[in-house]
Image 1 (cartoon, rainbow, N blue to C red):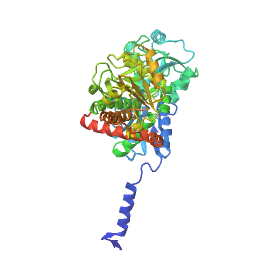
Image 2: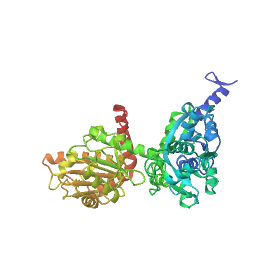
Image 3: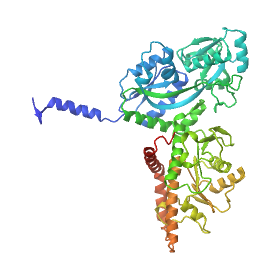
Image 4: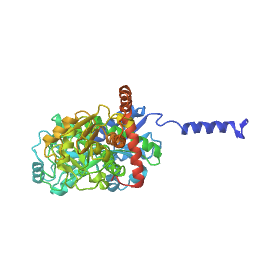
Length: 533
């Protein structure tokens, strides 16, 4: 038998083939996402929304496979027993990953040991729905009807142990009612029986119910979360409707079999998180009554990192410094809490406000002046998803000069060519929305605004891009202030060079800013683990 360096040729071929296979690019064949419920329910809807866009990103088909039965256990077990190669994934739910382990005596898989978490997709309220001809037109009337006829009313669920089951069990316990449970193999099978009146009610996940509610096929009475759903703000919560303290939420995500390589998990996580963070996907999830949890968590972590990095890089001089970020969906934004030092800001202590100044999430006061400025800029400038207001030393020094302008004298400054607004009126005491709207008009569609005798405002479509601009703005201002302090005359760059450089920098800004900001975040995370929580 022929050999090379003492290795038999057949063995050498086998080694080469194995090496080629080990190095093949992932994914090199179609992916499969198993939905452990019948088509038509919220889990199926989410899988198809994400799968469709994931396919275009990874360059391979993403097949959605429905494997209903045993409250999701059949599909979950199939994935748990699949090869851990990243090609078979599970559409995970509250029931499959948490409730079933406590509810079923003989489980064929262990959710804690047999799966790797890939990405958290959304948090979901359920919605209380009844047939269109039901005599109950409110939660109070539904409770009265159930108490008047114990055991006569029935409720449908997507399976024993699902959130659509357990949310009603909680409701029954808190209201002292007796309602018969009718389990199905998924919401897609349960909803037709509800519409026809064969069952009396259902606490369905909102994504599976929204289209039927809008079509008048079922009547909605309330949502099960502690706050009203953005998709249907007219619906009260169950807690508002006479059951104080009631709350029931579910969630959806993607999981992989245990042992799936970490690099594959990270790749799918990054791709899916990027998809979920897009305005298009956020809007689609919001239409279904779901909150894109992954996107908001990432947004909160980015904004928290920006505060800490501003301290490290000396970009936070003065008082009333504020950073804000409009969250996906455009109905609320994050702002730092009044009285909290920037080094103390984390993802969890940021405040969430609506454009009218109502505090939606978090505890503590917010600076009214900051609200007037930031909310009006967010609403008036489509580029301003992130608004950064600070008093950086050298940028502020320029605003103190009578002729304080950033001149195009070196490359850092060229990033801002034709993108700077100047306001000589602002006195640092915004008292109402009118002044905030005036500043928004002065800024217009530009990315930077100098406020005379005060500081600067920088905006961008993301935290990374806005922070990158802030960083390079201070560098440019520092060089200009140093040059002026030497008493010489500033020497401008030729206009044609300015325009071409600005065009090139602007074209690469998103990619470069994300890489730069990401690198700074990684350094910060190594020095301060957990800063983003």
